[in-house]
Image 1 (cartoon, rainbow over the protein chains, first blue to last red):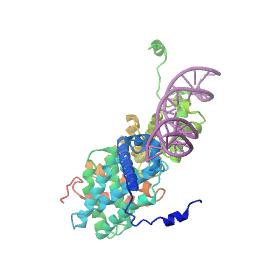
Image 2: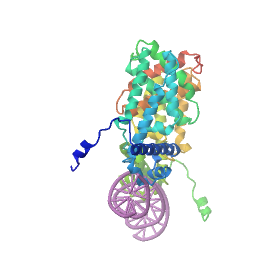
Image 3: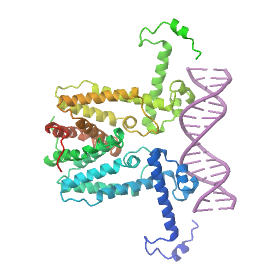
Length: 217
Length: 217
DNA sequence: GTCTATATCCAGATAGAC
DNA sequence: GTCTATCTGGATATAGAC
């Protein structure tokens, strides 16, 4: 390595990680602009149809210039993945206007359904794995883990601590979303069922001593 | 058109649509062989990664020769789609070893779950729409409609005729399958929940006067 | 009926001028 | 920092020889 270590030591340390110079700010603004254009494109033409040429054109560049901001196409997908999980977390974590945990759970269900169905391309990126070779980085995935924990906490406040119940819950929401997008995109055929599905879930895991009970055949 | 119509009239009519000459049989055998190789490839590399070069190589051809059997890549997907819906229908329609409709419904649920999770590529082809521009033909889709009708009939035999209940049912199975494949491929984390999910469903739509009841908030 | 050869088009990514 | 030009490799599909 020919790196001049003494130069680094002479440089003043970053006084505040939030404080950034104009060049960094400009760069991050451009990155955000690129990602915004990428979202537009995948919403228009589908997630898999994202092409760097088109993306560059949208932001007034040529394709090679994108590599100054993202090292690869997968890196762009990863940044989008991170934005998606962050948005999902914020959607779930926003204050709920009720003190009734049951109503709160219904509100969370509606939010997740709305979040997922309102942007099929985002839903496909986050919850299905259809891009060959793409795996999100742990950093991009982290908000999804936090969101999962928050919902689990809400279930606990309802007296439901069984991990199976949490798995059942995610399956219910996922199923409604999938059917809505696959069979009635833009409609409300499964959206109308969200509240009743929550009732069904609570009736089953709430009244039973444990959701993990084994039913005799 | 320069077609010689009198030749057709002189030809003896097909005495039996099932009876085929050797040439037709050979051709259909080759088509079946191509589709079998296509299934192998999508299971190995993913649905979207199917390449005609690879497919031709698997059956000992060059890529252009495939066009003697299928007019396009989408036609191959369509034939696979038809095979998939046919297999799904057969899975559901096979005799059930019980006279108890409730147990029969559980058996159907397990079959559908097993059918879907045992072949993720097939599940992706049939129940998600990730191939840009591909729409199945009505012929390929027909068995799926028949399967839907059979399940609806089973629900009716349980006294459940509400269309909403059928939609809820499909969402439940779809959700369990999706979570299993997305978060625990090859495992049993959601498969274990199938029977309990059926119980939950029956407890909700079976005991209630109507699944379409509107719950007060 | 299968082949070689090719047309046409597209992709992601890199090198190096300016 | 952005560009032009290019590399490398892929795709689907077609033309025409054999």
